[in-house]
Figure (tube, one colour):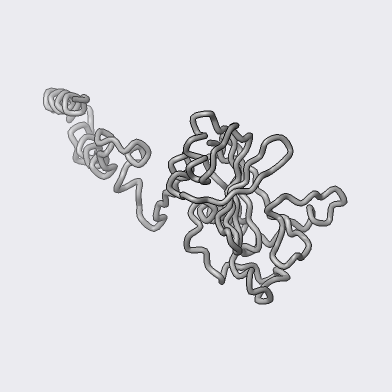
Length: 245
């Protein structure tokens, strides 16, 4: 599955889509409804291009909010009441709207996904949906799946969350920005998990300092000539030790 969009409503500064709601051509989507029969409030939608790997922006531009919305949409956990938008017309006024709400939209499902999707929803599916959306709402059912075929969306309740996770939902992986990761763990090792990529940068740097530092083996042409054989032996040994077994 490919994540194509993230939705948020009543979340910090992402209150709701004012422009869409005011548009004469606005047609509410199934998840735009709110409890109590009030007029629909469209979610703020952020489209996710398949090639995006990094979000860059000025301070307070909303980078963390987008990432948090993706995390809350995936897990539905640790959503706090204090994150509810204070400018929302429902702030402290509606007993059924106490938490922000989130959604994720996916495409690219295949025939191989049908059994797990049917298991997650507790029903038999005859056709692969064109799109799938997962929403975390305040009212029951709090975890909802919407399936699109053509122009219509059908809502279903998640019966078995573990099956939905096995379907290929992304997982959240956080790096503590306060830890000097590049100096302690190579980025390549974080990405691959392979032991051969686990040599710490500090070890590499100390080796380079030994070779090229002020008192290193090759700090001058004279030193290089004097240590030519030792260098050749050390580099040969390092190359052999790095070969895959």
